[in-house]
Image (cartoon, rainbow, N blue to C red):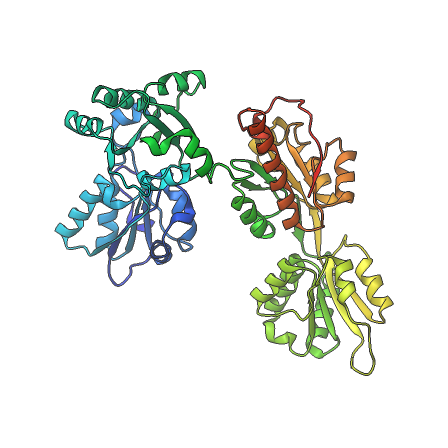
Length: 556
């Protein structure tokens, strides 16, 4: 894109009236966006945001929103590795004057962002209507995630200092007080800020915490004192570092004492905090599982191991769908989300919708399949009350009764490689089954090279295997996971397949459920963390361990 700004064609069609929303994206955790922020993003025509903010907000923007790239024009800052993005105002004004709804997203809170303030004044001068959606300020949100309360029951003054612009008078006032000081600075400037406070009167033994990448799963916090922080960084080999320019929040005061933080560091104490977990499923299949892993502090990475393709001969599926409409079936049983998708696509091809299921009983093998049906507009009549599998479905399936069941036939759309368990069980219960290949499963294409290298080189902390086929396919398309990677399997059969491929299984789910598997991995992570603390060792992720360390299988 040209430094002079985007072409008119870069923007979507005009809205009736231009407006700018200055939106606070918070410190980094997308979950800290406000409801109003999400609402504004959903209606935006143009989204203007710095690169480190864009990923936080883009997921809530509508499809097709324009995201013009900000151009770096400050040469000195570029050389230092800290780009200053000055053309945002031009992009905002051009889009707003063109009648678009513009969201200008900034880190933290727009009221604490000097550039955003200048852009608001420019809007006011040009008569462009604007609004402000506050966000969680970095200086408040980061300490909260680090387990450092800024005030307690006794109350205390809190002073906020931006080290980049702080004057001698500012340092003197904060240094001479006993207030909690929240200092915004960079990693390589922390020691200098500590020195300023000591020179101004703060005692060298005053507790200090320093947090980098706050509120994200990359968060890391160091505890020290004003007098020891430089030595702590040196011993931990934190500095010198090419990342020394990265922003940090330092909290100075008794509330940042190590003993207190050990009790209050709720975020970094999550059982899988910072773990990069490989989930060998598609994003659609892994959605709820990935959300569960994130709740444990993990960073899920979805890698599809299978691809879904239409059946080689579609006539069988076409006849079954027509039979569904003409009343050929008493039941239809869905054994996967993919089966729901296949039937839905065939319905859309024929111009049908969920009303075609009227008078037909619908079964779903589990909660995820049931959710896909509800999204289609169909509420399943039968979901297993126990195990979410073909066997669990058969446990609850009623036998055929000629008195109450006018039709004795079941439509079973499924994969080409599905097992015969459900078909045999339904026949034993007296039902006739139309076992129809609705889709084919084939091995997916290999993931990108960097993902393959991470799998083989120990870049992942754990991998979740949800079936024997995911083991075989992952090894086939990406290679065998490294020895340090924690291997978690959904059941004994999957574990056996993993061991046959030379993998040492660490975690075995107590039930054949992906959510129980995630719980078991979280329990393993918690035990590992507790053991490290009890031994007085630093808490590290598996990918940070020495190769060859012994591991022990865990079940919960």
